[in-house]
Image (cartoon, rainbow, N blue to C red; front, side, top):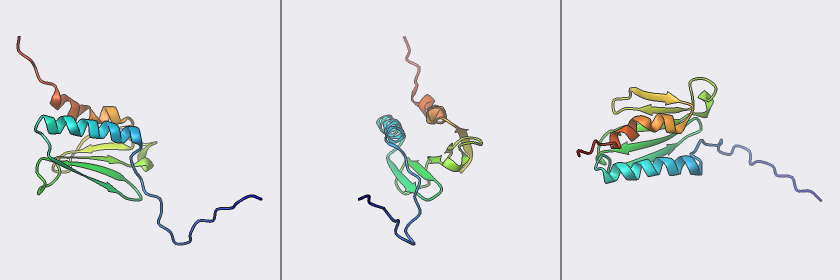
Length: 113
């Protein structure tokens, strides 16, 4: 006897989220930025069309950066977009590591000899 699973009518549409490796990469960067004194808080938002990670300098202000994942744009300009504080697009691409590179560069500091 085989079981048939019937979806609940009128249920919530599936939402976009981050998989484990993506979230690990994002939270690793967040931890390093906190240690460097750049960020103090974060928020995540998951909707039917996009998942977003926002990082804040202080809790009561606009996010310093917003990372957005939109799978519908995968075949076009890439599903990853990095937005700046005033909403400008800083980087867009198909790979998470490439989109995070402007933030990674902020952590690199020249050490004097």
